[in-house]
Image 1: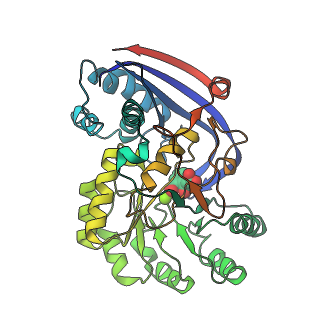
Image 2: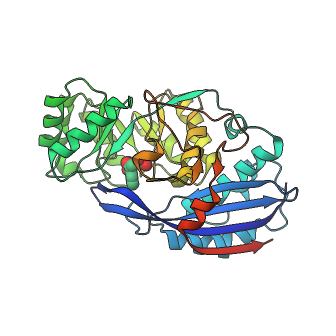
Length: 369
Ligand code: OSB
Ligand code: MG
């Protein structure tokens, strides 16, 4: 397969509600969509998941655009791609910029699956016909609003509830949740808001029987996490700290975590996400698929990835309607009884709604290779 043409769009989509984490609040989602066309006219889609502000990782929508246009897409010129795994090798001279890499790599995976007439799930070696999912609920102004969101999510059947915590909004928040919902599968994500100085507070989180605590310490740390994990019973789940299968191997070897959150964008694409899955599977460490407030195309890639067997814990792939008035794919992603049916048609398995896409497009580029 040879990629002959790449269309890049920048979209701007307003989320139904703002989403707040320990690092900030997001509502106006600006992101990149990539469409590749191969030598037989097959098409594939990928979504860039970087935010407009570099507070989750150093990438932004604009840096992704720059890296894609000036470096990554030109590297594909004249390359014969036997398998989508080749893409990460072609990009190996470019350091990091994982979200930019993943955007185009995911488009190549979709295109390759369509060329072979198979689903993306089949292309990845996935096994599930449906996936169990959870939901991530951002920080709220007051507890009643949060409780109402949890209630709604339980009614939709979400298999676990993730809440965000930050210093000053942790122990009392979790004890209020546990008072109201004593036995629900619950976890908390700190997005790197603590340090080892907070060890006494972090130890006290054990009383809430959380499924795990996600990324309590620094984004670039696996050493302090190992120290912390020895002192708390709650399993640590690493998110920001894991950028590759090598990172996963080292974190597991050090005892820095009991669980890993895999995000396709954070790790540079589906090939690396699969490798992390495999490393964790061999080590007996369960994984789940994280989210980046994606629109439908990113969501579709997450669903396919989650069909791999070691994705044994419910991830953050909530239904389209949790984020968007109207998603850019048809059908939208629906969650019933906390599960999503894995689509059965070729590639990502959803149609892209071009009318809806055009409505949100604020920039276009076309590159012939
Ligand atoms: O840490 O997983 C995270 C959203 C934005 C940035 C980071 C994170 C999140 C979420 C929400 O937790 C995931 C989602 O619903 O897509
Ligand atoms: Mg997280």
